[in-house]
Amino acid sequence: MSDPTVLLDRADGVATITLNRPDKLNSFTVEMHAALAEALAAVAADETVRCTLMTGAGRGFCAGQDLNDRAVAPGETMPDIAESIEARYNPMIRAVRDLRMPVICAVNGVAAGAGANLAFACDIVLAARSASFIQAFCKIGLVPDSGGTWTLPRLVGPARAAGLMMLGDKVPAEQAAQWGMIWRVVDDEALMDEARGLARHLATQPTTGLALIKQALAASATNTLDEQLDLERDLQRRAGATDDYAEGVRAFLAKRPPAFTGR
Ligand code: T3D
Image 1 (cartoon, rainbow, N blue to C red):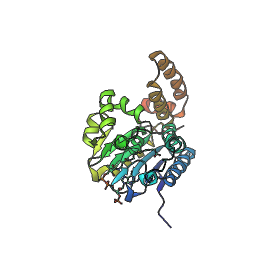
Image 2: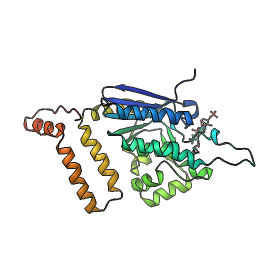
Image 3: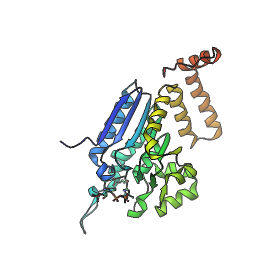
Image 4: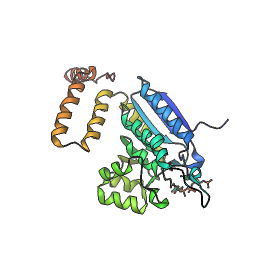
């Protein structure tokens, strides 16, 4: 029997999802998409999980679509890949963005094509010093997908986004951090300890409040200031009604550490 293409581990309130096709730099097949969709659905349905950590097995994070599945002989017609985007890539990005908890991405190596844009869809991205990011699409005549044309200009600005997407240059992790594409760079051997520590920390924090922050940030990309002020009011109403807010205030006044439950 072949190895599972996605691994899911749950402990201490953290779900760790590992893309697991290391020989092909964890590039996406239909099977791996299905396994990832199943893992994300399981995490979404599990109330004990308060933070998700994504990473890749082996020396790469993810090299995007497995191009072996896109090989056509001369004269043959390429299948309509919009169907693949609609059925698999778009639901994947939506599932990550809709998770009601922070999603950390530990980019352990190269992240190319949809693999890079999957990382950028996560809330906090740590990268190993040897990792890199490539908008590889232009090299094979495609348009960046998986939300890249939405996230990248917001992260780095339109001028850098255009250069990255039209030239397809490899961006080393240090430069990605300097440009604001990711949260931080970590020495290779420290990446997973650091990412797990961060995930365990977030899993003890006010999860509902963190999920509402995620919603506010996503909406701010298209809202006017007036709309965003109204949204902040509404989200704050929900945050203010949580047990964790009451606990946070009690703990502050009692000068003790808070014990958040995520409710
Ligand atoms: O089709 C649709 O559904 C639309 C959706 C599109 C989404 C997309 O993501 S399109 C973009 C697809 N991805 C790419 O174009 C990236 C292709 N890969 C690369 O450019 C390079 O592999 C990397 C820059 C990522 C890494 O380079 P390097 O030198 O570190 O490694 P390598 O030797 O190229 O790759 C190692 C192995 O992984 C190698 O296999 P082998 O020769 O050892 O058996 C290579 O063929 C394989 N591999 C890497 N990327 C892919 C791949 N195999 C299939 N598909 C890949 N995308």
